Length: 501
Image 1 (cartoon, rainbow, N blue to C red):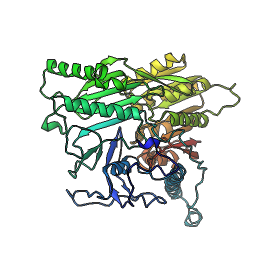
Image 2 (tube, one colour):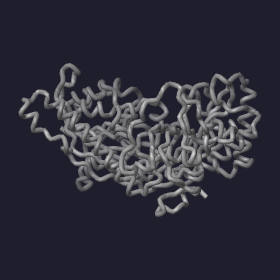
Image 3 (cartoon, one colour):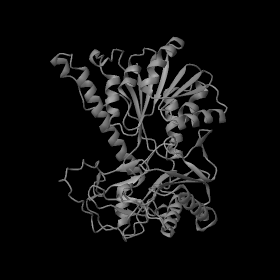
């Protein structure tokens, strides 16, 4: 029995007996998400404190009173012991703390030119803009549409175990634990992982645990849509195998999943990527379609989107609709559905979902994205939906945007910008271009980690003009912030911020 069928009213308990847990330190990887926070089930009312430093090479100690499944659940879904309302309250408080920190830093910087008397009147105990209540995810269990499963030694020592890591490579205590009890994982993903484990255990090839020690079978990524269509991507280290030898094992993989025991997975797409590095793009090492369709499709806010093997798409479809609706209303408020106009700049646009969703309310959408395959998907998605006022440009935003701004400013007196960068935030040249362009009046920033590098972006957008940093344009003001829970059972959420001037 999986956790997804366990009563939420009972606190989402594991099927195994729960002992009173003590503080546990673990690390796990789920797609591009990782956490190494110190989590304690007794800390429900407060945010986990920063992990204290440890001596070099000191091994992490596990709580022996917890099962491996519990340790993994505490790593990947640290809030699983809380009911959902408690999770939302915890995330709301965390976002408020982050924004209070931002308010304090902006006030201190902007007040540096004030007299000491006026400076003393600044009250940093309250936010100077509304923080709206967090928006809940429509689904809180089994919501992930993309999962990445690792291969390593399991609890029983078998190196051909497929699951998620507990422990760290640095500490030398990695254990690969199957994810059957993770409540954010859909059963279909877990089924594919179990079948892949069965396949590699039948294979004569060894797994690739460390690149320099040999082995071949690596991770597997599973993607699904709301219709249940399933894509699997198997990663493989060629080592010194000949192309003919690799073809033999690719054929065995197809045979297993399409005509053998793995047929229960009902894959509509099976990909294979040969790579001698941890991760590489389609351009660096092409994704090979071994069977079925090259894409799956998903719908968001009435628009249909093509998803390639390596395309970015929000991991929670239902929450993505909540997020995009929130962004659309903040960027382009609906004024009777009859007003339409202006230009929307969609930076870090990915496969174009946000720009396409907003296209009915503007004259023109221009998206900028670094990854070439994502740009191809964005252009295809626009055509697929009959959207003809969107164009997507490939390149670094810090290179493309400064060249584009003068042309757009001459066309429109007011530009609206939405940015959805990676955790590393926006490049400083992008912030400078936005700040120094008078026609950019409204900016919506989506951040999955506002306390990280994005905080630097926020401060540079809102600080007083600083000629030394070449921030000479009028400063923005933060008008409103809205958290959206994209990742139930985890401490994370998306934060949407509206800046205006």
